Length: 393
Ligand code: SAH
Image (cartoon, rainbow, N blue to C red; front, top):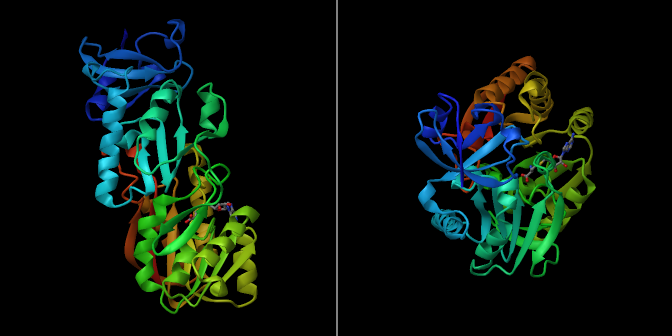
């Protein structure tokens, strides 16, 4: 294994647990060393101390990701199995071994690897050349999880191209017939591991949906950016009188209908295919009001430079949503943009409320579910935040 030296001070972040090395933190030009993308190297500080083993890709900004100490051994799969076992032990403890995110990349010490489980089916994302190089070992290690009969590669995220990798969405082994059914918060959801958004389901909101359920009895619920109806269908199961799911995707709404039926709440569910901003406007024109409005949009801020524009979008959608909340009702407002802090979201929410003369009382702070653990040395692993607030006029 080759040793690569870092610039002075570049080791400071790593010593605090961070796992990434940026291209400009290497001593000398990475591109001139003839490294293969995904190759394992030993990282050495400017003072010649070993920092551990990382895989590298000279063609991307996050050029190195730390895997462990040299003693760990990265080729025989033993390291991989230890890390996977540790990830599974935590999920067993959380009670989400059958339906949940089994591996959350860097937070589980497995940089670039994400695994979601839908009962017998695993949906796996390999985000980097380093993880791609371990593909056969990953496939073999995951095959030994009890009750798992199929594995899908969901290697179609945009970042793959930067890493120099093909994009694919394929069955690696076993048989997958969609939908694959999961249970969550007392409801049933049919998942499309091969063609659904991201890996197929947003488990990161599971704990937050659970936090809302005590408040939905007798409520008229509006679920904006509903995808498969995670919030709306659950609410209907937990005693809401009606739920309207709004999404711009026809296939997402088709799954809402299927999920409502499987959960026995079809009679309470309505779907609306529309842009969420436009839908809010037309609902307002019709003088419709809801007791609970959920705002769970896709990331409006994908890169740091979109921060200002994105903050405005959060403010606008929350303002439109707040106009639809009945006096004394609740708003659930979320952001999955890493570059938007909880304080930023709260500020957007407050400004939105003030601009329409509403007053908020925050009763819950929301975060990504426990099976998306946060690495305290890596702020990048924390991305989902939200609030449940009561609305008074
Ligand atoms: N609330 C969902 C996750 C939302 S993901 C859950 O709990 O599982 C974001 C969703 O927003 C996607 O389903 C996407 O189709 C939808 N979407 C994106 N832009 C939209 C827009 N402008 N109007 C309505 N829906 C939109």
